[in-house]
Image: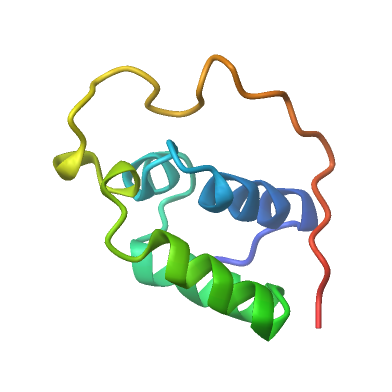
Length: 91
């Protein structure tokens, strides 16, 4: 797996947390498969935060492009605020 800067890792985590950002969008931007994203989330987050995220996104239709019923909002919801310098607690 490719090594990412702290800023890129924070952006990957931010995108993974966003409900409307698909795993395909993360793959498009960073070349990561869904399992790679899961591994990054597991490594970078506290165990309780990772479990909460996994429970939330598992089977979520908006996280998989093929399961979506809408075509707009591929990368970001228009109503979502910009998050900069996202810092998620690390173990």
